[in-house]
Amino acid sequence: MKRIYQFSAVMLLFFYLHGVYAQPSGGPYGPIAVEYKIPETAKTIFYVAPDGDAARPGQDLNQPTQLDVAVSRARTGDVIVLKGGIYRTGNLRFNQGITLQPYADEKPVLKGTGVADTWTEAGGQLWFTTWENLFPAPPEDWWHMEHNIKFTPLHRFNDDMVFIDGRFLQSAGDTAEVDTNTFFIDYENKLVYIGTEPDNRLIEITNYNVALHRVPGMYKGIPNDSIGPVIQGITFTQYADTAILIPGTYPEGLTHEREYGNDVVGTLLENCEVSWCSRIGAYLMGDSLTIRNCKVSHTSTEGIYLVGASDALIENTIISDNNIEHLTGYFPAAVKIFNQSYRVTCRNNLLTDLPNSNGVWYDVGNVDGVFINNWVENVGDASKEKYSSFQNMSGFFVEISKGAVCAGNVFLNCDNGSFVLNSSKVEFYQNTYINSKVVFARTERSAANDHFGWHPATGPDVDERYGHVFFSNLVFQDGSKKDPILEVWQAPPLCESLNTLQLEKFDHNVYVRTTNSNDPLFIWSGIGKSNCRLELNSLTELHALDPDYAKHSKVFDGFQELVFLDAGKLNFRLDPEFRKKISPVLPSKKIQELLMIDLENPYTGAYSD
Image (cartoon, rainbow, N blue to C red; front, side):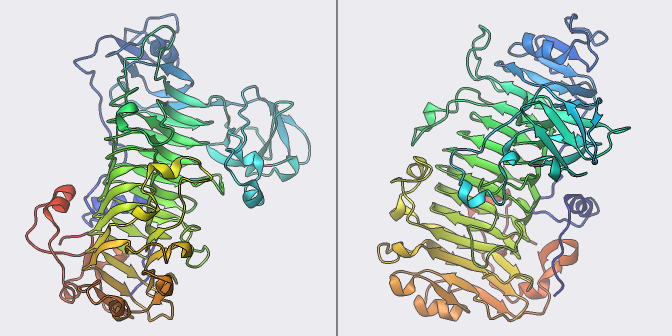
């Protein structure tokens, strides 16, 4: 069997367009070219342009105003139409349900940087300029300096960014560290240093920390209408903190969902691109929000950050290249769904090229998440400490949460394809894992004396972390990794106190390794001290613990025959001859409805044909 190679998002889309379907539900992913019409329901229409005149009202296409003027005047139901070009602007605040969209098929780009065109040579391949708008920042108070300072110096937490001809530079701790790939800021004297000769180059330095800030309460004497904005077809890039900021009531501790999520309801981001933000691409609170056909990339802590946002949908979106500053001890995630978000669905997205970040992380108090038909690729480094789930990055991560369904996804070349930690009733059906480990785990972490305070109180307590399902999945390793194919473990202090297995339903899965290995096939934690951590090399050893457990599953170890139709072209449908060797089952009606299929034939893994 040939090694499963790593492919970029562009190549993946190429295969799709040329008839080799390389994603579970077909794509396309990311922004789609649209010629935008003015909504018939629009009240007042404001036309804006990068060179618009702030003195104009902006209600004539041929006499546009400035974007900040239109945002300050727009009210519920109004539409702001942006002519194409670069808008160097930010900190645009409003609290109304307005629409922002391009004029026809033009391409408006909001940039949070200014152009630095006056430089002084300092000698020794150093140049400096004076810059007024700087964004120094400390790490969060929970960051463990003693563990991480040698990997992440404090200057990395400052939010300033510098770009030379569009190329991102990392920060440096002093002028001695500055080279062609770094910059240094003397905050006391407001000086920015670079190590590249600046003549005939476009050098951009962050000037704004936020592009759009949708205020959740009263603003300039205007009451909040609680209607989320509609933002379509716009590019946001190079902001010092967050491109799109929609805060709201923040649940502190276990809170009923009716008490939050109501400040801003129904936000829509569609066909937008967000990139190169020093912290977060889009920080969004509020119920019933939708992110559709967007691309979010090159962020530091989170690409998309949903907080207290129930009944949200993220679909057909590309999310890649999070944690560009290589922060350690900061728990990065390309998509973080945080703090008691109910019924958040991630459907048909492409998550790729995330060596320093988790993929989608349902974190703290979430309920009934849905993760279906996604393609998740190249999450994590895969060179971390052996058997260390905490050190690895995960494509789909559920922590301290209750209930989720993960079905119809492909996980390719991830440290952990999926990781369930200290949660209950997380169900996996019809997924294909390729060189991507599966992990279920529970620890003694509780609401008592926790480092993060109230977080554990929002999820299942220590003795409630069970009820998981792993059914009809395909897990494949080609020999390039040394990890077990599946881990089910718990912390040693729990081994004598808990008498319920984590997996309630565990069968009809297929496990394939193309090489014979001395490494264990499974890491397993049963009940009682003697079963706390077992290394198992076959299903027979598992059946010796419980004859009915995984009774219809199959293991192919050292298997050299074809498994997929064409793995080299990312076509992970099963080879017909291999299909004959397994015993697939028909997904339940519930899973078929989630996957939007209606079948009569059973199958294993993500592909039904």
